[in-house]
Length: 171
Image (cartoon, rainbow, N blue to C red):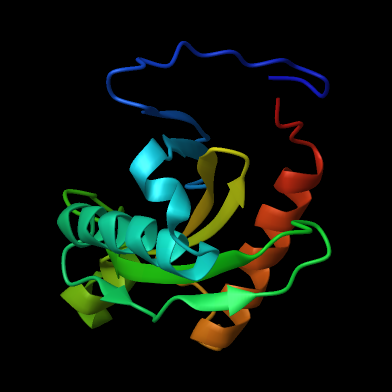
């Protein structure tokens, strides 16, 4: 993918939802999901609508991240979104990942130290008849900085999502 790339995906009108996701070898992931609002759902206020989608996504995060911790969704006022938005962060262990430990450190390493953790942030926003969820995630690998608090990770994820959002044109 290069700057200026155009990504198109066919939406199954029966489903009314979709996802485009990108990842790299360093544990960084970006995704854009969309959910079409049904005619009967269009009477809901933005907070109710966004909270409903967030609850659906929280359930999926709990399935994909064992021992997931979901921080409560918060309304955010971001100049980038220019519309009501909701943000939440999920953290959890990455299942089935093997981490190589240098021989000199193997005696002092515990299982908790080598289990990578994911920090996944979601920004949900309502545009027209759609709710979009912009997601980024990063992994803390073995030996990562233990001073990274959840608040610091939240600021980092929100910043990355807002940068990504600046480059998205909704049509």
